[in-house]
Length: 211
Image (cartoon, rainbow, N blue to C red; front, side, top):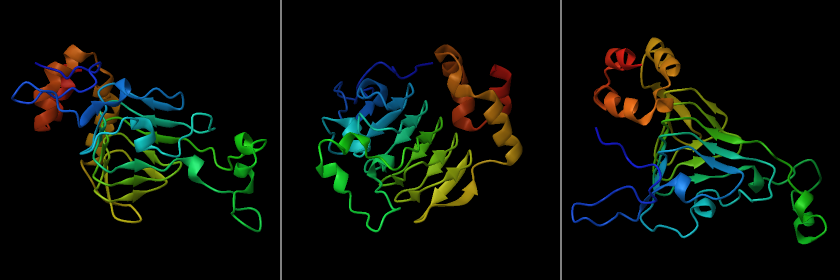
C-alpha cells in the first residue's frame, strides 16, 4: 500500500495534480542543529512560512543550550508553537530584566534555562497549541486545540485546556503498553504500509501479528 514520501518537501498532491504548499515534511525544511525531527512528521499552516524552524519555535536559537526533539509520524496543526527554554528570563535576581542581552560580550552566555523539549512519536498537536519549555510528551498523545502544555504528558493521553490537563486516555493501559512495546513507528516502510489497515481500523491484534 502507498506510503507518503518522507523525502518530499510537500508530500500532498491535490486532485488537480498540484502540490499543497501548506503541508511540509519537517525533516525536509528544518536545518538547525538543535531542532531534530523524525521522518514522516509534518506541519501544516494556512500561510506557509519561509523559515519553518523560526515559525514553529521562535525562541530556539541556533547557539542555544537546549534542543527541541520531535519524533516520527507526528502531526502539527496550524498555529501550534513550541516555546522553548531560550524564551525564559533569569528569576534569581531582584529583576527579570535581561540586561546581558544588550551587551555583545555577554549575550552568548545568557541562558538561564537549558531544558530540552521532547515530543514522542505519533503525537498529534492541535490547532493553536502551545508547548512550554521542557515539556516531555509521550508517544501517541493528542494535544487539543489551544491547549497549553508543560511538564510530562503520558503516552496516549488526550490533553486539553489551559493549563493543559489529561482529559482521558486513548486506550486501556494494557493496550498502551502493547503499543509501546510494538513501536510500529520504527518499523521498515514496507512493514508499516502493510500495517496501514490495522493502524487505521484500531485492530491491535492484527498489528501484533504483523510485528
